[in-house]
Image 1 (cartoon, helix red, strand yellow):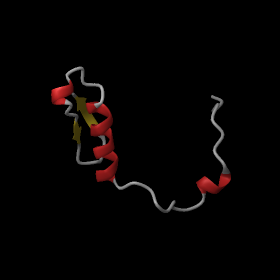
Image 2 (cartoon, helix red, strand yellow):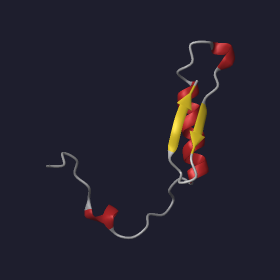
Image 3 (cartoon, helix red, strand yellow):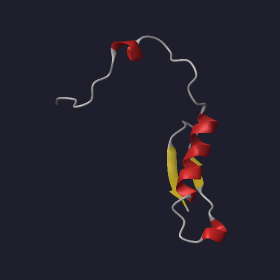
Image 4 (cartoon, helix red, strand yellow):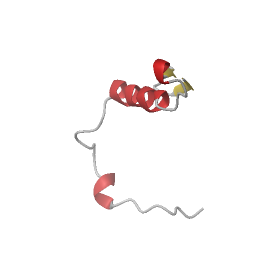
Amino acid sequence: MHNKFFIPKEYLRGKREGYLSWDETFMLHAVVTSARSKDPSSQVGAVLVGKNNRILSLRI
Protein backbone atom coordinates (compact mmCIF):
# COMPACT_ATOMS: atom_id res chain seq x y z
CA MET A 1 0.00 0.00 0.00
CA HIS A 2 1.32 3.46 -0.90
CA ASN A 3 1.75 5.93 1.96
CA LYS A 4 0.35 9.34 0.99
CA PHE A 5 2.38 11.14 3.68
CA PHE A 6 5.98 12.18 3.12
CA ILE A 7 8.30 11.76 6.13
CA PRO A 8 11.61 13.64 5.83
CA LYS A 9 14.67 11.46 6.44
CA GLU A 10 15.90 13.65 9.31
CA TYR A 11 12.84 12.54 11.33
CA LEU A 12 13.78 8.91 10.92
CA ARG A 13 17.26 9.26 12.44
CA GLY A 14 17.59 8.57 16.16
CA LYS A 15 15.49 9.84 19.01
CA ARG A 16 13.96 13.29 18.67
CA GLU A 17 14.61 15.91 21.37
CA GLY A 18 12.02 18.16 22.97
CA TYR A 19 9.06 15.86 22.52
CA LEU A 20 6.16 15.62 25.00
CA SER A 21 6.26 13.13 27.85
CA TRP A 22 3.47 10.55 28.12
CA ASP A 23 1.92 12.51 31.02
CA GLU A 24 1.93 15.75 29.00
CA THR A 25 0.46 13.95 26.00
CA PHE A 26 -2.43 12.47 27.99
CA MET A 27 -3.12 15.77 29.76
CA LEU A 28 -3.40 17.50 26.39
CA HIS A 29 -5.83 14.80 25.24
CA ALA A 30 -7.95 15.52 28.33
CA VAL A 31 -7.90 19.28 27.66
CA VAL A 32 -8.94 18.83 24.02
CA THR A 33 -11.64 16.33 25.00
CA SER A 34 -13.01 18.74 27.63
CA ALA A 35 -13.34 21.45 24.98
CA ARG A 36 -16.05 19.35 23.31
CA SER A 37 -18.34 19.63 26.36
CA LYS A 38 -21.66 21.34 25.62
CA ASP A 39 -22.02 22.56 29.22
CA PRO A 40 -19.69 25.52 29.92
CA SER A 41 -19.88 24.98 33.70
CA SER A 42 -18.52 21.43 33.58
CA GLN A 43 -15.85 21.29 30.92
CA VAL A 44 -13.99 18.22 32.14
CA GLY A 45 -12.13 15.66 30.05
CA ALA A 46 -10.91 12.24 31.13
CA VAL A 47 -8.39 9.89 29.54
CA LEU A 48 -8.17 6.27 30.66
CA VAL A 49 -4.71 4.89 29.88
CA GLY A 50 -3.48 1.29 30.07
CA LYS A 51 -0.15 0.04 31.41
CA ASN A 52 1.43 0.14 27.94
CA ASN A 53 0.61 3.86 27.41
CA ARG A 54 -2.33 3.13 25.15
CA ILE A 55 -5.49 5.18 25.44
CA LEU A 56 -8.35 2.91 26.46
CA SER A 57 -11.09 5.55 26.61
CA LEU A 58 -11.77 9.29 26.27
CA ARG A 59 -14.75 10.82 28.09
CA ILE A 60 -16.32 14.24 28.53
